[in-house]
Image 1: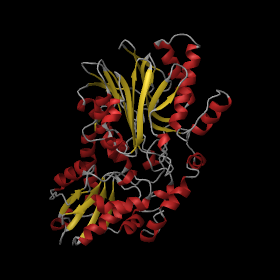
Image 2 (image 1 turned 45 degrees about the vertical axis):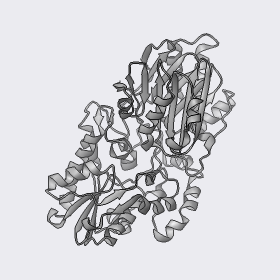
Image 3 (image 1 turned 120 degrees about the horizontal axis):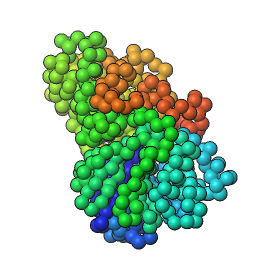
Image 4 (image 1 turned 135 degrees about the vertical axis):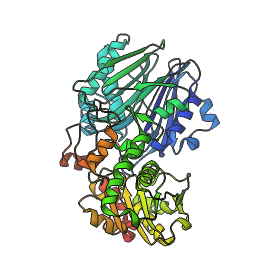
Amino acid sequence: MCGIVGVVSQAPVNQLIYDALLLLQHRGQDAAGIVTQQGRKFFMHKAKGMVRDVFRTRNMRALPGNVGLGQVRYPTAGNAFSEEEAQPFYVNAPFGIVMVHNGNLTNAKVLKQELFQADHRHINTESDSEVLLNVLAHELERATRGASLKPADVFAAVRAVHRRIKGSYAVIALIAGHGLVAFRDPFGIRPLCFGRGDAGFMVASESVTLEGTGFEPVRDVQPGEALFVDASGQLHTEQCAENVRHHPCIFEYVYLARPDSVIDGISVYQARLNLGKTLAKRVVSTVPPSEIDVVIPIPESSRPSAMELAHLLGLTYREGFVKNRYVGRTFIMPGQSVRKKSVRQKLNVIASEFKGRNVLLVDDSIVRGTTSREIVQMARDAGARKVYMASAAPPVRYPNVYGIDMPTPQELVAHGRSVEEIRALIGCDALIYQDVDAMKQAVGSLNPSLAGFDASCFDGVYVTGDITPEHIASLNQGREQGVEDADDSSRLALPNLS
């Protein structure tokens, strides 16, 4: 999961891209980068850290030009993340191309060999995004064969990219002196939308980015579609993939996206309200509402679901946790010991809302179980008589290979365990999960035109059709040891969680 943005304007774009990245900060906290173009020259600054820490006044002054890209990143390859893997990435031929990418290629290892042996291109990092950039560059070179670049050449190159690469990808690239190209994988797994403003175009991961920077959202980029804004500011679009099937990642609606975004025609906020409605039915079948004194959300993504659940069951809704907004999301921190330590730094209880009460905690999802266990204990320490926990998402039982940082089964508390076993590990008095089909219906009812969802981490169905257990093992080669090393200290407190 990353956040990407691209802008073509008649005015300088450095501040605009910076503001856009602030609106996308929730999608990645490990690194940030901006590249701008003035004439045929690119100017780039990228580094580890949050947007506000990476860019200073001197950095912004060194980013001139009316065209540019930006990205906020979190890594999906374990703890081994070096600053050189921050995006944007650059390659000098043909033309000069810079690119940002959100997603994860599932055949990156094969492509890397092809690029070296057949395409004679060198990959200098472990990032699949650099692989993707070089595939795009090679196909642009083949499409133009030394001639000047036309929109038809751009679309021909994107068609070839779709044929070669597999996995999830939303891409924005600048071709020096020619324009901006953006495209999305044939399943539309990762989000991408575009809008118009008085001065030009913006392409971004979420609609809130467009609205928050003064651009009027036009629509989502369709699965397999490519957009090309040429040097004169003209927009060209073309469908560049065969066998297109629209299956956006359902975890965007559960957790990843901002609630004020609209992704593929679905309001994220309304999707979370709907998840609360269906979760309420599951709660009633497990714990009589008369045994629940108060419903308390675990900030922040679960709030809409918790409010709707409390309303439907006629229960009191209260805020019981105060969030420190200056601590990063624990879900996307690299080591479990770091995640565990950060929970109490991130959340503090309002003890009066717990003392002597039977409390129903509502979370958006339970992935590793580390945070849930700590929160249940915090509620007990605050005096709760009983602590029930409900998840607006089903059990996360399967690895995700499309760009969310939960690829190894050993990291998932629900993998190979029953709900009762998970409940015992977390330490709550009752554990209620959303049903998979109910989740899909709750979100899918908001846009019936969708073919379905990528819900692979819940149902084990990988929509790209190329994922096997052996493939997952290969993708995660070397990661398990990194996770094992990072989690040694947490195992003492959380036995059997990995």
